Length: 133
Image 1: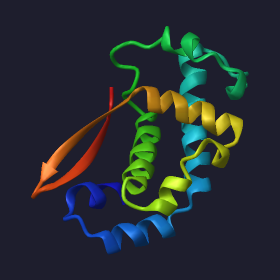
Image 2 (image 1 turned 90 degrees about the horizontal axis):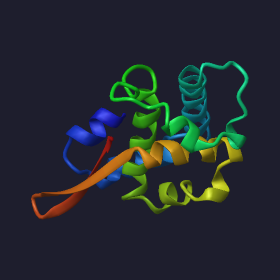
Image 3 (image 1 turned 45 degrees about the vertical axis):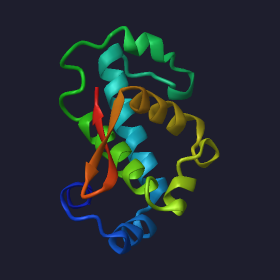
């Protein structure tokens, strides 16, 4: 879904359909699951409470290759949700803090902190492009 959104022509009907057909709760849960595995690996522990995790502790363990591997999926989920939220009010509403549980929000905040964004002019229309940093 993300690839077609990024590579295709901007078609707001398709973007609307994508936003309304996407299960944001499922996506947030998947982002959390991928992030949890990543955090456990980075911190070398199997017992972790995400909502209580100090992100600075995790940030201190990062190196240049930390975002290679399975954590890429969490970035792709984040990018998909935000790409839809940029164009569809319903999708944007799903990105408010009240729409996340505490664990989901912690995972989301970490990914958000490590995601960059640029705006590109495509045929007179600005498009936001998100990428891991």
